Amino acid sequence: MSSLTYDDIRIEEDHGIYIITIDRPSALNALNLKVFMQLEQALDALKEYDELKGVIITGGGQKSFVAGADISEFSSIPPGGAKAFLSTGNRVMNKIEGYHKLVIAAVNGYALGGGCELAMACHMRIAGEGAKFGMPEVNLGILPGYGGTQRLPQLIGKGRALEMILTGEIIGADQAKSLGLVNHVVPAGGELAKAKEIILSIADKAPLAVEKIIASVNYYDADLHQGIGFEGDQFTALADSHDFKEGTLAFLEKRKANFTGK
Ligand code: CAA
Image (cartoon, rainbow, N blue to C red; front, side, top):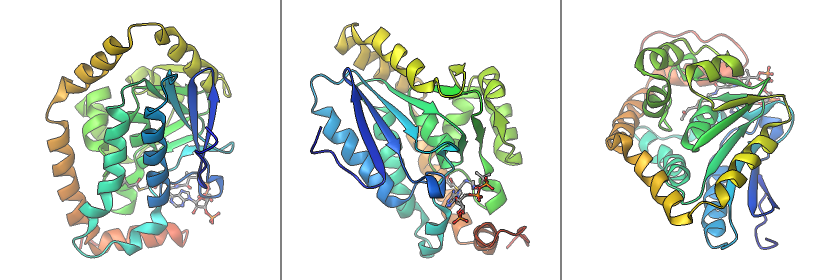
C-alpha cells in the first residue's frame, strides 16, 4: 500500500478492507476535481489487490462525510461546459457503483448534494446517528448533477425524492433510514465498524457470484446512464443561468441568494 499516497484522500487497510477517507475537513470534504481524480486512481489501484475484500468510503474530521461538490470550482465552468465539468465526477460515481467488490459509504456528519450522491453511488450506506442527508442544490440555482435525480428516486421512490430535491431539506439519519436511503444507523463513531462487519460477512462468499450480483442489481434500472445524461443536459442549461451564478456567489459570500428566474 505504500505506493498509494494522495493529498486529499487517505487510505488505510484493515484485514483486506480498504478505507478511503476524503480528507479536506476545512472545506467539509467538498468534492473538487482533484479529489475525484485521486478517488479514481485509488479505486483503479485497489482493483489490482488480490486480497481486497471491500472498500469503505468515509469523510475526514468530525463534521462531514462530504458537503457536496466544491462550490468554489463552479465559477470556472465556461458557458456550455457544465456537462464536461460533470463528466469526471460521474465517471467516478459510475466506477464506484460498478465496482467488483462491495463499496460501503460510512456516513459521519453531512452528506449533502454531491456527498449524498457519492453515498448513493456506493452499494450500501451506514450512517452514524448524527449524519445529515440532503440535496440542497436547488438553493444554489442548480440541480444534483452527479446522478442524484436518478439514484435518489431509485432508492426512496419518486415522490419522496422530488420532495427532498425540490425543498433542499436536510434530514437526519433515522429519517434517512425510514426512507430507505441508508441501510443501518449506528451510534456516532460506529459507522466504520458496522461497514467492516458487513464486508467481512460477505468476504467468504463466492467472489464471482458477489461481482455478478452487484452487476445484476445495477442492471435493475438499465436506463440509469441515459437518465444521468439527460440530467447533465439540464445541469448545463442551469449552469449558464444568472441564478446559478447568483446562488453560488451568495453561498460563498454567506448571504441569501436573490433569484430572478434568469
Ligand atoms: N463547497 C465548497 N466549500 C464548502 C462546501 C462546498 N460544498 N460546503 C462547505 N464548504 C466550506 C465553507 O465555505 C466553509 O469554508 P470557510 O471556513 O473557508 O468559510 C467551510 O466549508 C465550513 O462550512 P460552513 O462555515 O458553511 O459550516 P456550517 O457548519 O456553518 O454549515 C453546511 C455546514 C450546512 C454543510 C454548509 O457548509 C453548507 O450549506 N454547505 C454547502 C452544501 C451544499 O450546498 N452542497 C451542494 C453543493 S452543489 C453540488 O453538490 C452539485 C452537484 O451535485 C454537481
